[in-house]
Image 1: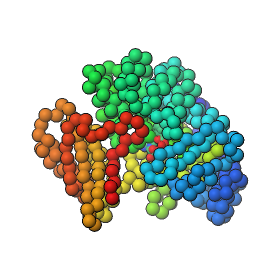
Image 2: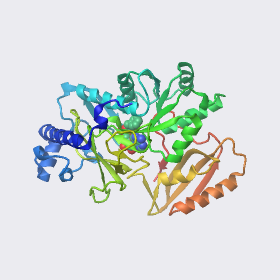
Image 3: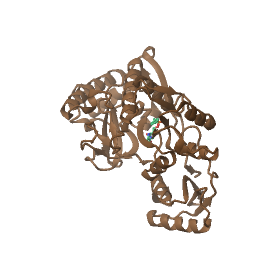
Image 4: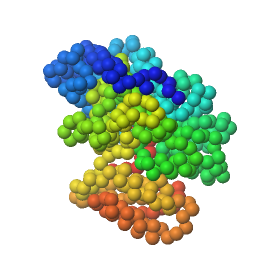
Length: 427
Ligand code: DLL
């Protein structure tokens, strides 16, 4: 279902809207945020001249800037106009505090409703929302969008998996919203309770908030008998609802470009990359009042395409984010991406999609230990499986793990609330 006409607007029309909104955003940020006034002045950019064409003349905003301006240095409106704050959980240090005016909350609701409609969810459907409620943007972001679409929200929030399962079964929810790792956990939990997860009423899950590879998605779809739709967003820009796949084609995530302008840049040089090339996603908000951000370096690795989508939507699509620029684990000077390890694991039918990576330093030497779990149904030799995985990892990684352990089902700790943690860097 197309929720808003702008989704199928001709590109030229969209450009006009973007140009106007970019200028308004730059003027607003320059007028009200000393950080942006200084940054634009230093770059010699007059905010009235800002547009899509010369956007790369604008400096970037980084996570570091959020840290330095903590908690509210980047806010662009007086406190009295702020209706809500959220915070993103940083792995280190203080979180990033983000703010919304009444208008921001309206627009967020509406991009979320649009996203859910693109995912195939319809007014009248019931959606169980298992994203955490609270400072995290997932719970309340989805909640408002589900209601705005005219669907029924079951606000279970994160955790209490027994109750999640009961609610799903008894209320007959059509859709479920949760992280990909939680989705797998729920399927496993159901199985253990003698409930066939494929018999659950849910036909769509919207998975996001953490990276996953395509084979991991296939596991989810197979385990629950659902269509798993990738939904992306981040607190600094708004929360969930920046982009989503359409159920129609499931080929890339439609970026709601009338609100968020996407670019992909070379993470090293910052140069804007052409369509199709992989790099770091940079986002500029076009309609945010409380917290406008110009050219925000998300750290998320993806590429963009403007090829028309079979669903008729005209906005740019971004590729599934399988990693972050800082997801790179440097082990003994060699680059290893978590997604490379995940992709290798999920190729094995006997291996469950749960793993952990432990990095340590012994003396001056980095060590990497990988732990994987075999499926409950696997009755072959753990040692033989271990050898095969080691061989497979050897083919794709430039550094072999120092330790590779295959453990039994359920032995790797699951994340019931929040985002899955897979990498433990003890260095
Ligand atoms: O995770 C917002 C969200 C909630 C998105 C629910 C989707 C569903 P933050 O906590 O600020 O916001 O974390 C944002 O999570 O920069 C990515 O690294 C990662 N991320 C979010 N969605 C995806 C996704 C929410 N679909 C950070 N695929 C982002 C991969 C994702 N990574």
